[in-house]
Length: 205
Image (cartoon, rainbow, N blue to C red; front, side):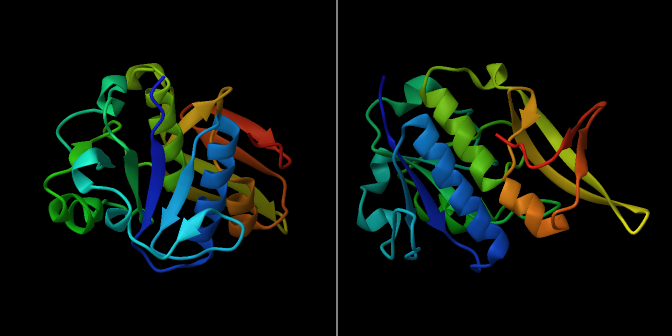
């Protein structure tokens, strides 16, 4: 199996939410046995560097993941490439195409690939790309379009909608426990997508 390094190129304001996604991405990379590097800033406890990816890799030998790319990512795309570049950008709804303007358009010599029509969170995009590298086809990776975090506060039901793509792992959306705690605190909650839901007490993948 061809093993490429995965790079998250930091391109956004560093806030709590994006830092949580970076930390979760590192946890996913460790679990999946791949190398991850955050480029563009130095973070404690996470492999990271203030250098940009193009200072480390030749741009013609990388794949940039871009939702607006014409071609879908395939396992054979990893042949001969050194790294996969994921934009360190918090998603907008509706999408504003910032990956294209901040990454793809700046490096015409790089390969550009999409991982489907959905706009994934950073950690979810990493997981999907790893599965493709390991031999899966995109259509074999279960995903959902959006989810709701439903909790109760002082007898009132509260609902947060996250309108992004999420891969399903063991039948559950791949989302950071720390992110949910950041959004709703320690309240018990339900995560709902489509007609499915599960009750969570911080037992996330």
